[in-house]
Length: 293
Image (cartoon, rainbow, N blue to C red; front, side, top):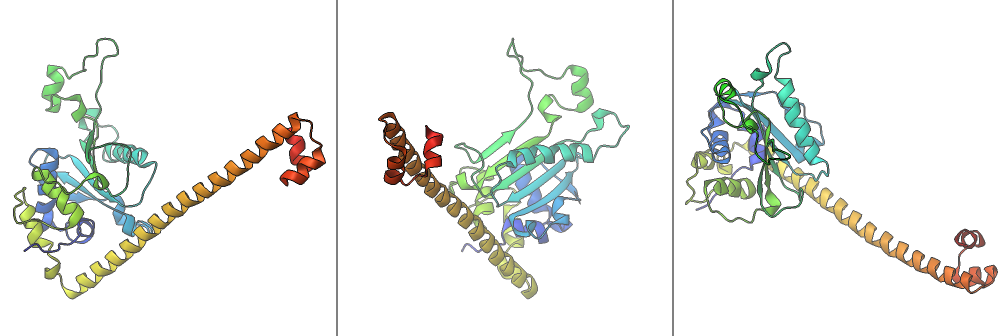
């Protein structure tokens, strides 16, 4: 029997920050990044200084793995047209924020950001995207690679491993189709449910630790209040979007009517109608008609 689990965003705030629950994040990140991830610690992140507005539309957590890489996981509900710019800024901020002045640039930490968004970000068919930095020859069309000395020094063969890497999971484009282990985690992120057939790394631990029925009374009330506020926030966002579209359609129709009226006036001017007659027939002022003339 499938049980309803605690939503991933609430778990990020209240449960997954405990060291004994790092295994849930490790399981998700290992499937996403395609390598074994071991989390050593959680660092200061924006959600630790959250504003009232951010309590429900955004949650983030910053982890450091055993390779000293910085991994930021962010859940975002509210639609932002400049979200790509925020991703770029966030990656750059982490890159410089944990770099000590005077150190060699080779000591820059690897930065990975994971963005789980619940709105229509960009235009694309896939639900999962990876953004990297590659250098392609303008004339030869070859890819610039590290030389042997750099490969030995930085312990990687890819230039893109030096730059921040960004993963985007677009929940609106995921349609509950499970084809691999990563899909199992995404299914859980979207539906707060782990099916009995799932076998992705540590996903059964998520099923065990995030069972709503295991919550104490205080946490359950807090969680229910969070869900109610989140539903309210979503309703506000959707209402604003609908009203904006409706207002745009109304304004568009009014502008269309006015332009048609102007076109009629132009035709009447060409046929040498008297200005006063044009004003009487169209309802425009004499000043407006003179401007069109």
